[in-house]
Image (cartoon, rainbow, N blue to C red):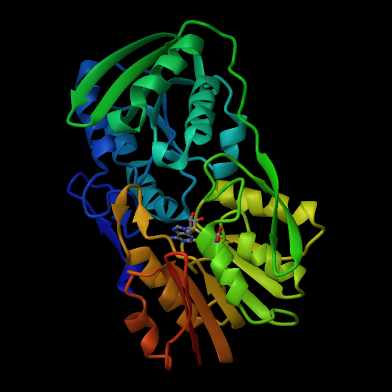
Length: 368
Ligand SMILES: C[S@@+](CC[C@H](N)C(=O)[O-])C[C@H]1O[C@@H](n2cnc3c(N)ncnc32)[C@H](O)[C@@H]1O
């Protein structure tokens, strides 16, 4: 197995791996939350809503508190589960994010504003739902990504708010639940995309990649793919299901892999809306796929950011996974910004063809 899946233990005893925000060190927002804990007296039960590899949950556990941790990234869940096992705290299922009901004295949350307002509002509403009356929410975020604005907005429904820490671009604030009327929950977005002469009705939860539209790179890719009819198709990093959904409409037998649990839920909704059958797995790259599964056509628009950092580890592992699961005479099609260096990693399969160069993107293809 490649080094991508190797799990690493940090000095504090928590685990991390490639693909988790802040891999190799602590996510800076989480590190600042940890520093801020000295200013708080905490007792009772704590929920970490954006737990990453579990560093914060581990610290609360060391203080003898009752701790639960939640993550929606399968990549992070792998590391978090190991930390939880050694520290003895509970990891909630991603689906439990919808049933949080005033159980906790303190909730912790890192706002990742790089995925849009709707997702930030969703998390703040969930933090509100999770805390007891009089409970508190410790929030970290980036000043340049609207932290103060989100914090001010949250104050209107929590009742009380104070900034505890400012460090470089990061902020930590404390919300206290003194009002009890829940804010309105952001809803999933419905929209239609069109490609290859087909129409796909889509539904995407807050923060899902390219929600509301067909991403331009994915559009370019769809314009250049071979016919998927009767083929076994794998879509790695499927988002709300744009590529896999269109190829399923075309008659492909499609499997979609996605790290983000909200995306997995969105794909399920998209499939239902179109009466389509396809398989969806919550998976860190191909970690949830059978080792011997083979596909005739493998498609991807790989991510090259983890948070705001440009990191190619995940994208390179998408390529390795595609090689592992390619059937004899199968084809891999990938779209990327034209400057990203994916030709070399694809090359040991065969001659890499640049099928298109359009609107700042290139489509690469390779056959086994
Ligand atoms: C550029 S988006 C493409 C989404 C979709 N294919 C489309 O064309 O709209 C990349 C997707 O990869 C997913 N992703 C990121 N890391 C992943 C991982 N480790 N395993 C599986 N999917 C991952 C992201 O959540 C995101 O939905």
